[in-house]
Amino acid sequence: MRLKICKIGVALLEIFLISVIILTAAAVVEVTILDFGFSDMVRIWKEMLIGGIAIVILEALIFWAGIICVYLTSVQLGIRIRVIGALVGFAPIANIIALIVIIRTVSGEIRFESERIRRNENRRDLRICDTRYPILMVHGVFFRDYKFPNYWGRIPKELKTNGARIYFGNQQSASSVADSGRELAGRIKKIVSETGCGKLNIIAHSKGGLDIRYAMSYCGISEMIASVTTINTPHRGCKFAEYLLEKLPESMQKKIADSYDATMRKLGDQSPDFMKAVTDLTAYECSARDAAMKAPEGVFCQSVGSKLNKASGGRFPLNFSYNLVKYFDGPNDGLVSEDSFSWGEKYTFLKTDGKRGISHGDMIDLNRENIPGFDVREFYVRLTAELKERGL
Image (cartoon, rainbow, N blue to C red; front, side, top):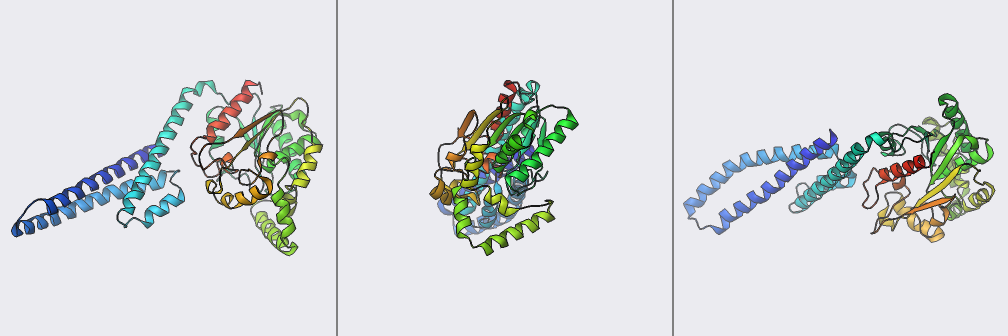
């Protein structure tokens, strides 16, 4: 239904754009090129005025119907294009350019999503994501597993469409690695006990990868884990985090931490600890844990990382943090350096050509954006399908 409305909106906007160009050109020709006497000119202007009112009303109806359709249903337009479109709506030339951008963006979205739907329909009976063991998706720091908005964006729905059984970690937003690991261990034991599934395949993003490694190493649940895939996890930590902790006055750190913890208690966390979460992401802490926490035998472990090509390729706040991270840690995804991603027996590094790249947030579909050269939903479908092929 959403795509159908998008298509209607684009069609109306295309009709509006083409008709405005034709009518404007015809009016210019009639007034400036053709040779008329004064009386003829008066008559023409009267006719144009009468007909023009009707045309303006009709064109306005077509335009507003089209723009409302795409503004209400398009995901890829985003806030920026919507705002620009509204601001330049009455600015000649600029409004035409904005309209062309809107049409092109929504048309691209329609093509992309239509192809995705066809692809899923063609492989529906194969259930390529129906793994032997269910999937547990583990979020990173400073987020919760809310249903709306979902931390993983459009990914869980795509996996379910292809047969996956999905659970979520449900750990608190900010705690030490040890505390989060114990929470996850309890969650895993509960799922295995209630469903009788025996084991779980873990897909963990960012700090979630550190949390699940702790749970496997110290909480006695490794036999309940079939596989672990870490996504952009700082296995060897973040040097820039150490720098910030050194430079920021303790009073400021405490103020930020107290404010965060108080807010998250109201939003559902029982015992959030901002400072412990941040401290456990430093290079010193992560490197020490990385050396101590070995992957257990019998568990398939792999890691994934990505590269943001330049600061402007990221979305807020990663466009600001990219250069800071680059200064201390080198090439990165906006938060975590390339050197920190790899872990396990298989490592996949993702990158794209051009200026954009793939950010820390892009790996969880944070902005619900269709990125040229990287289909995040299809990436997770393929990742899960490979787990199925391994008998997991």
